[in-house]
Image 1 (cartoon, each protein chain N blue to C red):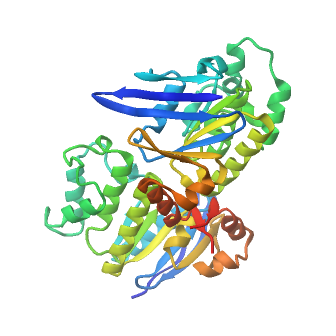
Image 2: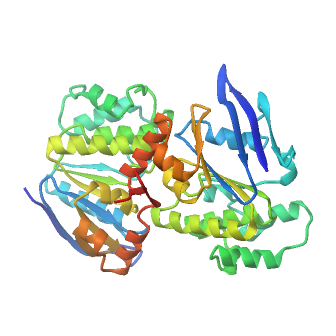
Image 3: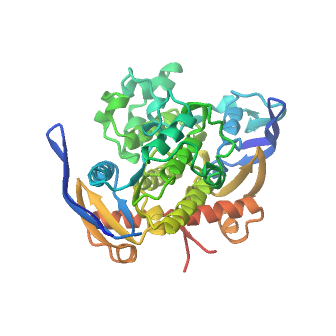
Length: 241
Length: 227
């Protein structure tokens, strides 16, 4: 499992992350929600070892997170691909980098699950829709069967309808593959619909960690309440009658 | 006063992206223009704005991304003064402070150029420009896409407030039916360059007729929660 243990990250004279502790088990989904600048993306960068913690440590099954080669899906799917490589070349990069055999079967299966036709891989990033590009990015993140996948605002570039469709595909795929997923999002609706646990982060610190059910009923921190109300006011969540 | 346009259409590279469309907007009415990406919503918005402006009406526009509204080589102060001049006001005569405070951009440095501000702040600056005088109609194209939810909700509330004070009609263009349903009294569903369904928000949510409307209604929110 992923264990984030009392992690502090410095930024300038202050801290970008303060005393963050989280755990995530295989097959489970943890959503990290909070406003822009709260430290959500810094948390992802720290888990990927791109940023060194000042204090504390992050492990996967007791070893460094690098040992499990986590998959990463980012916000802007088109920007995530090299525009002069075909999608096939981009998608296979994790495999080529490891000198492994081509997992034709796996590509076929993942493409089916993500509702992508195989001919799409002959195209270039500029030739497909943004929704398709994000599904290809998800496929690339999963191609080497990582036990942990980090998703940094994976749906925010997509339109409201495609968001819901893609979220369902990710969730179904997670059922089949059993990976642990950490989803960073500012969309509380997405978190409420798909996460096993929601961690609310504000100014680099954790305000609250709870299940969606508890979150809806008895959010403790004032900020969580504010997020709930905003999600309602924007129609992301519907109040029950 | 009723604003009305009729027979607006558009073609691009020989393809019709907006079939002849007419629309009447009552004073102070709020209309949501919804549909999936590429259905012609923004095109209709642009045509509508051009048509009404050519008739001498005051129409404010908040485009989908602030880059469309702001010149990267000009300071924010220049943009503000330009907006005042366009409305025939003396530069510096408008109450910038109240608007900026309400939109929480009062700390933004007006000497900077747009890219010196965050996208969310740029978006709110454009919204502030749209609220300078009292337009007859304000057209908002995905106004909350660059904003985080708490700011987005607060900004929509503020817009609503101003609109009521100013008696301004609103067209909200969005792919997010959940958002539109909360903010408008009437919905128009677009598909393939046509308005395929229009009715009161309540009617569409409860009795969508076309497949597109049914699809949008089914995907309008993430979850139902007790509260």
